[in-house]
Image: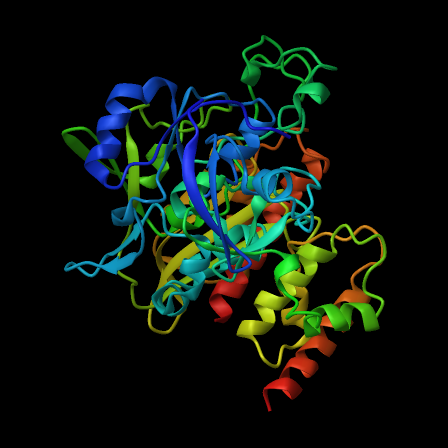
Length: 160
Length: 328
């Protein structure tokens, strides 16, 4: 198969690559860029472990062709921290023990971050709906929902 | 899971897409959101030699009101774009409900209207990895000669599980299909063969350009009800869409359609303006509609919930859909 040259903007850094068209964004992130934050869970879009943000919108990187995101801005969990300071959503996940094995966490955190960028004072039901496409098999969802509510407060405090 | 190899094209407009389809049609797959096609390719259920990615075809995107007050929804419009459209939310609330019921927000960000309509039929014994499938005989849908879901079945019973088609059919929507040099507009229900193996009646060189919705009528009441185990991600186990045109006093249903999904190999029209034509609204009438849905629903054991339960739920959800549509 022919290699197709693309430029990906990942966490603000441009990367020039040549990829075959059947390579997914997830494979490029993990294998070529060695960014291991996004995970392959089911591989068929059902679990959300591979979630990344494309132009700030959460999508499944396992069902996205790398050639298809040429020139778009991609955010992985590695891109959330500012220098040594982790993102308020990450802080909240740690404080509320919303992580057990951690496999779903990067997807959960990115989904939550994109949601809180749009929704400053989320209701409980809205939080549940926002993460309804991400599956956690360890903690259950109560602690994760709680962490997102805490993160919303942190972010509100920050913007004051 | 790896995607198989394919030749890749990324056309920028409709004419060049149709040109590519006229050359590669038979072995080509059209890629939109990828949430149906790429999954089937990973599971080795589809192996197109050519993939034509539609994402750069801007003409296929967006919602526009046309001169005759109909609404055109481009096939590449994402489900999230529909949910964010004030026209859909305010003027077509039934469609809004059906879109909202699809999967979960991240997949709504990817999935498109066109892709949702032409999604493949599904079966518990077919939509599995290649390794899983090796434990069973090759079924009709995979090119074999048995049905692994229905014992002694003489054909494929794979089930159509789209959420949008039943509501769009209830709304009397049409679809525009184009090929090089010509274009046709047909009622959406004619896109479906009702056959499990080849469910979509679109020729290999045809492109689904979009959906035409009739103007939002006065006193039109619609509702979509969906049965599923989890309230997100799951495909419907039964879906019921109803649209009625009511009189001003809401005591008479002038016309309407009742359409089911996930109880056959295509969307099933349980009532097409027969029981719903000039009918006095009453509890007894709602019950008659529910019985019509019960009769029309023909589920088979190809999901984890038993068919008898799903058939009864077609009746329950119809009662619920009609009553709730009348309440609003």
